[in-house]
Amino acid sequence: MPCNIICVQNGVMKDLPKLLSPKATIVVFFDESNCFDCNITHLSDLTPLYSLAADLGLNIFCLFSPNEEQLPNVIISLKKAFFPYEVYVDLDNAFKALNSDFPDDKRFHIFCVDVNSKPVFVGNPCSSRKAYRTFLKAIKAKPADY
Figure (cartoon, rainbow, N blue to C red):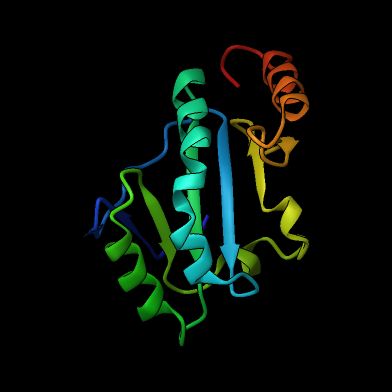
């Protein structure tokens, strides 16, 4: 995880986002290869994912990782979006550097990791019934403290 992050929720920027509890985490990652304005405009599309995470007791870590030039606009746009859930911003664009083998393919930018940061599912479990069933099987196959 990047060290220098902020959190934006309900149009308010928080300096110190809450620490994620040690449990499985759904990660949603947006980097400079994405259209940040488009993704911010469509953040509400992630609402089912946030609901699923809450229902299953999982963390969700939605991270925007803009380059230095894009950073001010991303923060302004996130504040204007007034999204009700926590969204994190990687202020140093460090996520990919910390995860050098992270794929460029956007299909792999939503995934779930267990408490040890090992992937248990890749993709958006809310994208289809089949993905949802596969996700539930993967989560249920892990011990209770995953």
